[in-house]
Image (tube, rainbow, N blue to C red; front, side, top):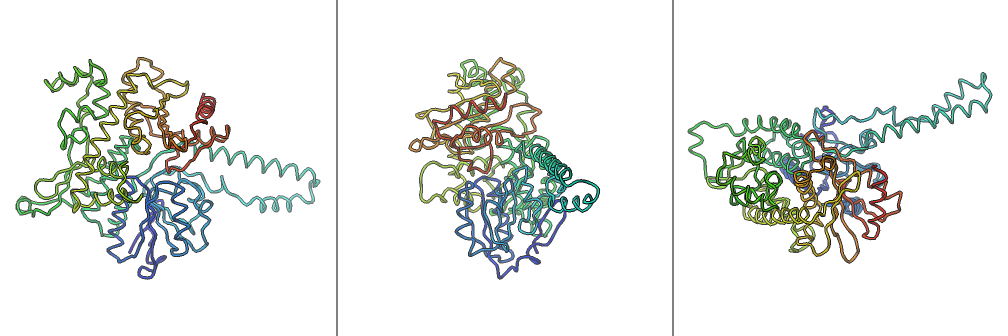
Length: 538
């Protein structure tokens, strides 16, 4: 028995909708770590009930549409993971009436048509998530019926011309009212509960949750934290929920602890250091390539390097060097495979993301996705270690690029936002044509810039970062991130702003990414596009 969660109501999916042994399911999975973890959990659930499925990775809207067109004749049931919630799916895909979509997506806000169309679209949403969706009557209404009712009531009492003008103004008022409500609802992009956590909740309700599934849920949540997609409060709250499951699955007495086999798996909650890959790196390398320590110590400067040496010489003086020890500790989980292999959740996130965005061609386009997915299984430690090596290269490249941008003053204020553009020929620039790597670089750069600038106004500004995408086609990839403030709610307004700026200037843009705040743009249109953004946001 499978369940589906919609606004706190549990409804049986597969027993009532999908005949388990007769239907095949198409899984469309986005290219991010949380989506991969959710996919692993769902695959395990499918395996329990012998559900046949086909897995297709999709990195953007174009691939999603192509995959749907290629498979719509063979499948009637589609599961979308971390894609599809924030657009009108039925309008984009134009499916047949008997096609059914199950959408598990952390992107917010959810498109209102998807919310209120429960005949073809089933949203998997964690119980307790506040979606803040506008009321149905505020955005949909049968205007013809209202006009007919109005006409029937006033046929005798009012002249037809006067009645017509009244009805037109009434319809116009409703249209304006509807636009304002939708604008307020869709203005900001943010993220809800991790899709992997939602899938684990599903497994738990069905009493089919396993320790492996719990670990994948932990990695999915940690991905949101590493990518800075959720607030610290949301992270701590969800950690608390998972901690109870960890205690339930990993409770052993001393005799059992001593008799564990070499193939065992154990998850532990702990307060760990907020240092990237420090268990697989030297402490010096980890300090240099962690965003918080690098920015706080200003390691791009000679003085910063001196502070680092002093810090290593006397760890107890950390607070005197701009480091708060409480900020160096974070609630997290670690996993033990057998007796010697130990990894923190963030280790897995960095390794899996690096495998997925590996710029070295090793076969078909889906090779990286499959490798990243495989690395999440405990039987593939060789792929996980390969991912850790790639993650070290990625973090070094990010910190070197951040240092270069700060030292050469590449971050400039454009009025309502900060702007930084990487030029072709910059070291590791090819890596930053990938969305996850570019987003990580942008967040690290903004944090470092805020620590380095003396301009109080600039400390409160968001950042737009651009990098070459395809030199032959003359395109750049651009991402916008919200301001770096402690009170930040992680809501991003750049998605809608990018759309409006592109429309107003006829800029040749491609809004292909599931995150609306990432776009592709023709290089020669960049100047007028940025001018329109400045005008729009001023």
